[in-house]
Image (cartoon, rainbow, N blue to C red):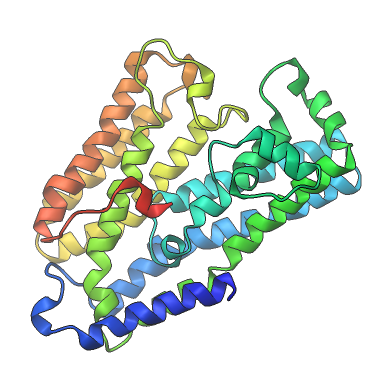
Length: 336
């Protein structure tokens, strides 16, 4: 059974559950109507999935071109493509939902930390696994470990070894394949939100909000607040893109939460929606002011960013979830 079939069968199974539910067992809390549910998906989720698939395709194309004729310009292009794909993934992971959760997309395309013995074995022709694949492995192949041997010239020289560059191209293709595997799953999810059976709409706010909270919990772990920190305490330290990745994940949350804000306004809670938007603006301002290298920011500045993101999470968890009468219970690992 291939991965797409597994995902579609999971959706089919979930869609049938409501047929055997007693009415009294249906989830409590707010439920969007069909138009609102599909509009939320169209505006808050599907554009982020499309951005990821497009960026992943470009990464695969750039890596293939690099391996065909390795040179400095193509290395730069592939690094740029990796950054676009990685930040697009972080944006999608900022508010996970639907088929990407069922498929555990994060584990497949961004497993961390990489395991260098397994990666080197895979490059040499051994059997690879998730610890030797995905965006983290590609980042290592494109940037190394930030030491003298990781200069652009040294990285380019290493990628002139056919087995090493071919492996980079292979895992780049795998990333693109995994993201496109979910194209049909998102289409089915949208169709189910418009179905007469209300199962997916009944669960939409509760599941999406829980997953947002789990993502924000993970995001906060990406911002250490001690005065003295090392560069390798940040997830994407090899590429030096940790700030861009952090902001992309928060931007994904901000894009998705707007659907909740619109529901609050519809329910007469415009002040709460306005407060959430203000929280998001404050976090973007404080976090956006940090230097590109987060390790070079003061502990005070990183702490201010952390607290601003934490405030958005608290507003969602303590006020918005209560207003929508939602049950909370997901953990950080539920969206990987």
